[in-house]
Image (cartoon, rainbow, N blue to C red; front, side):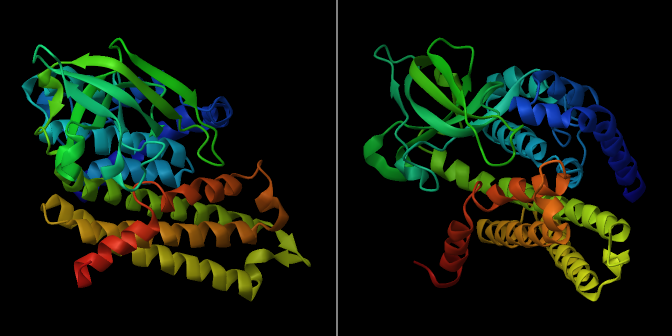
Length: 379
């Protein structure tokens, strides 16, 4: 298995070198990836790789999907890692685990091929971490056949290209968490509208959008999971989402360190390479140790998830620990570049700005601490 995994890793790196690296700066300026990139990745077996073959996936072990995210992040393409994670490791598993036969047949094969891009519609202008506060609603149609959806979402990754949105709604506003229901929303339906592509301080190529829903009629067969069971379903899917973020954090930090090592061994100051100074050497050593300690934790959590044993508190721990580490490492590596680290032409600057949001989306570091604390001492 190790030899097969490393061969797969080589294929991922080759694809990134040939199909991503030459175009990435242009995509950053454009503010989104071309939809054709997803089809290219699908053709190369890099989307939904652990999905069963009957739905178009490779049926590979879960770790292979994480390997794709890790290598994309290590290459310095964290925006792409974020988009891919939402598509392959959040939206697709929701449909695979909760969907009915109609939903699986309609969406999963096209998601594996890259023909249909997936997004998650949860955050709203007035509800981020507190998803019980969402206002988007799905009310039963008067004739009893399906639902009518109204509302809006914001900060939606893949929003500009999404063909399907796993959408969190309120079906009973008086029932609190028990009034939340998930839907698969086909974005070709009348009443769906994409808002502006939001400008961010980092991850520019990751399209991040507002979405609007105006009297969208959906059949009952588009309910994902149980009516009223949405909040519980979201909790159940959190471990994979946060583990994917942890994997990208370790890969991204590793990529930043690679660039810092390359720079400090070739750049000279006072007649000698920067890497010959004790401070530089100690900073590199500290970063490497930080990365490897957290890589070991990620590998443990990968194994737990594969066995169905990764719980919500442990997933919060791995997300908190790795993204905080990523922030430390990318900042230390940028510092080693001196003034050049602050110049946009040097990729290390993108590592630094792209990493910042990792401590925010998928649950802020503060929310992760609260989740962990509740598992220890209650509320």
